[in-house]
Amino acid sequence: MDAPVKVPTAKGIGAGFKDFGIGAVAGLAMVLLGGLFGGLGFLAAPILAGAMVKGDNAKVITTVAGMALGMALLSGSASSSGGANEGVM
Image (cartoon, rainbow, N blue to C red; front, side):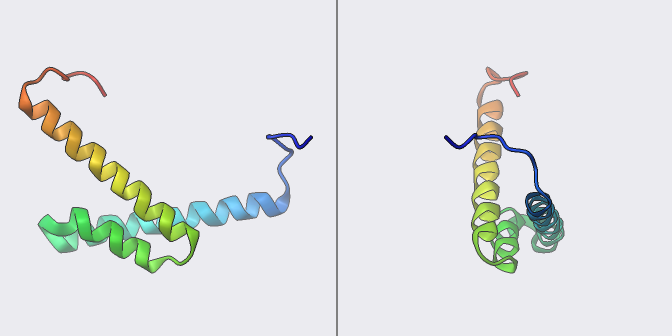
C-alpha cells in the first residue's frame, strides 16, 4: 500500500519550488495587470496571467483566480446588502 505522505525528495522539493515560483510570478503579473487595466483589471489580469504560463499551472492560476473573484464579489454583495454577515471572514 502506498503511503499518502512520503519523505520529501530533492526532485519533489525542486518541483514544489518551481510551482511556487510560477505562482509568485503570476501573482505579480496579476497585480501589475490589474492596475494597468483599471476597472476591468479584476477580469483581465487573471486571464492574461494564466495565458503567460503554459500547461496545468495555467489552469490552476486561472481557476483559483476565478474562485477568489467569485468569493470577493459574493462577500462584497452580501456585506453591502444588509450587514448580517459582518464579522464573518
